[in-house]
Amino acid sequence: MRQTIAERIFTKKCGKIVVPGEIVEADVDYVMVNDITGLPAFEEFEKLGKKIKPIANKIVLIPDHYVPNKDVPSAKQAFAMREFARKYSIKNYFEVGRGGICHQIMIESGFVAPGRLIVGADSHTCTYGALGAFATGIGSTEAAGVFAMGKLWFKVPESQKVIIEGNLKEYVCGKDIILNIIGDIGVDGAIYKSMEFYGSTIKNLPLSDRITISNMCIEAGAKTGIIPPDEKVFNYLSGRVRGGYDPILADADATYLENFHYAAKDMVPMVAKPYLPSNVIPASECGVEIDQAYLGSCTNGRIEDLRTAARILKGRKVHQNVRLIVVPASKDVYARAMREGIFEIFLESDAFISGPTCGACLGGYMGVLAPGEKCVSTTNRNFLGRMGDAKSEVYLASPATVAASAIEGRIVDPSEVKHEK
Image (cartoon, rainbow, N blue to C red; front, side):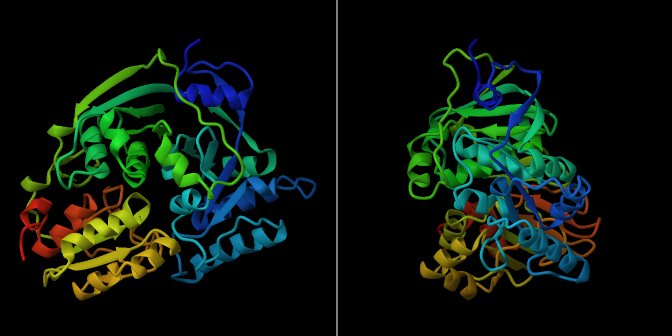
């Protein structure tokens, strides 16, 4: 039987040949929880009784949503994670100041590798598919089960094949690719499917852009988004990955539920208007005046994203009516941005720079929007009230579009400012 990447990974993890739609129990390589989803997982685990001990080497604990704590309730959440790590001697705990945004840390710290099966109590766990893993979000109760057993039940998903060929235009990146696709198939176009990405465009993308694509597959309803691993992935993991790994590729004549074909030349910088990631238009047609611009998150907070924005912002100022908030995705990204002089460019442009946190992305703190305010953001969701008041608006875009829009005071295509002095 010829299988897709997802099917082959489950076949390996189950020890038997699987088929789409089958309910299976599979061995999990790692389970991750953050400061918000961790507390209920810890509480559920403790209900299993004192005789049950967690499989500590499979558990990764990463505080990131309210880092640093914004109030007493968030401090209690963080305290619960800290105490759980101490109680059960869980070494994979990333204290504040030693980590960053959970999905970036999972990749940076070598937990993610081709062929692995990873779950996380956060919907954007699908990010890890960019390195050839099968990764998906689960609930906190399920996470507690994995703590105890190291395995979980799954329904083997059907797979979709997305093929993109050709060279991208200047300033068109992974964010624009995935917004194009979601705009085409809709937020329900891949429900419980595994999306696999192929073609010369994907092969030529840097790993950072591939991560952005996989990160937002959940916004099309997908269970995960997988990109076949290649030398770029292997080189990145060299000296970084924890343990060995077995790259898994689809069989040449694997069967896919659907096939989608795109030409890179047809893609332009895109913006997703409120209140769905599928509500897309070309950035050049938007023109909405903004109050805030946000650069960061697990979607676009990597060093490559900051470099792109810095190239546009260099020698320019953020519009007088706009506040630009910059949030590197990890301590490592923060340090590299400092060494490369990127922060100096941001500071001279009047941007505000924060340490790694998810706070603004979920409307928790560090950039909450007031009624009527509009924000162009490199994050992944623009639902009603996502970053603040229900009467605020979030527009999703790439780092280049966010930087250009911060300068202009309205959402624009990056080409509108790239030649200015």
